[in-house]
Length: 218
Image (cartoon, rainbow, N blue to C red):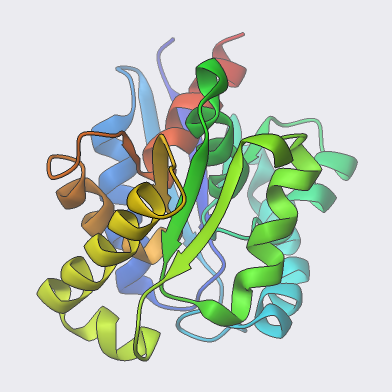
């Protein structure tokens, strides 16, 4: 297994976010797997709208093509999985998205699952993921934090508190049996929230790492 490399593509254009996600991915990776990061340059620093998500897809595919020779698998690290379908359609490398990976994990053993996140403008995109994966009957919906997503990202404790409220709503109001923290930039908050709740809180980057390692090792 020596020397397997996974390329984590951040469709957001913030290098600091890439570094944070790569660190989380490395801590979740098995021995013999290295994680390399790549950051988009044409996208906003944080994708919060459906238009921005759509616009990110071509650059994600370009990065994947340009760097395909130096990796054994690819993770698309934005929750709407921009560019993933194109990568799967045109490349032989195993590729996963953090959205699909976390939903597949959340629905294991027939669990009902919800999503807690900060980006209400992405509601339709998030709602379409369970349909594409055949998981509609398991999906209890998405709960959004109050306030501006950028403001929340600037204050980790405020972000944690706001996300905790959204997770609580998924559990108490929607009867979710697992809750995904929906977003790559929310990776650290996802890890911190896992110990607070009795139901599983799913961290999408960790889900994607586990899934890509299974695919690469197969």
